[in-house]
Length: 418
Image (tube, rainbow, N blue to C red; front, side, top):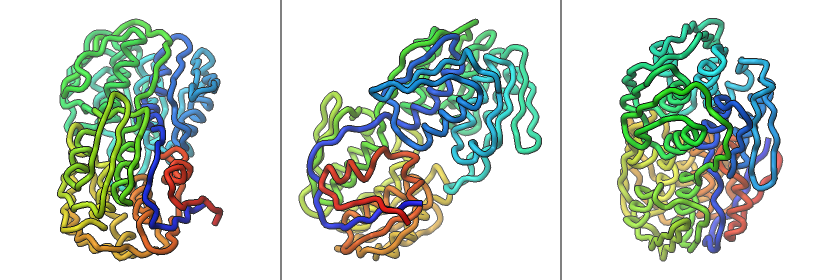
């Protein structure tokens, strides 16, 4: 186990590169199971969840080759197992994304149920019901989703809840289905669009990505391609908030400003000067930020994965800001840890009312999930004294070399063993 030690008070200044998006890389790596031929995935971030996905594919007999320049080549010709075991799935819920591709291409799959989630329930019934509508025979037994299908067939499916992984799983299955599939109430996130672009490059026919209705015309086979993962919009937003909180000035390279428009709008509202180009964003903040009100919503609304970071920003802002969480229940656990650092936060159901204070003070805090851990690091950057953030394995699931990037910007931060 490791922890981060942070001495606050340094404004962040300088340039850093944004990594590829974990939430795009994982479904694209699952989609390589659809291809009849090697697929190379570029701009892969070096993260724990990516390593877990590679281990999962390797357990199935898939051949993986890591090239220079953040590329992974995946060859499914050697696959000899269609099982995703509990010991891997329990560490990463996105493992369920292999269910659709395995059933569609190989006609069988056995995937462990993911189990609970620290930020609220994310049920798999939408995945299962959708695949059943497409002709798969599925039973949930012994903690596993066990499925068989001679050939997935097209279906008209309206999902009760707009879910990203559910949309991705059913889209991948539909890519090799017999006939046409229509997915209503589909997720509109950029990562869904990135996956659709990958499938189409393989020879698939996905229309409507980025809207709430997807139409997928199934094909007999898909070919291997070279696909580049899009930049991480949540990493982009996190470093921008860090710069705003510390009164700094940063330039983020190799990113996609159009993917973070709702975040940029709130940062401007907080008093930051923000400029954008084709693949870069700059931010400058003079003095303390102003508190902002926000409500999370599915894309293109304000992302739930940026909620914790803005709670940290509001904690040291002037004024009072209200943060409302509508996507996940039980996602304010980071606020309890920030209170230990002197934050003035009142939680009422899905709403946190935050009155900014002039100075947070260092304290030992515990990261309860990925984005909570990021928010506590941000709080540590502005706290007086040395903040200790424990259980940072959470942060390694979604932020590539966070302490190195922050140190490059001038932060006093180091990783140490327990």
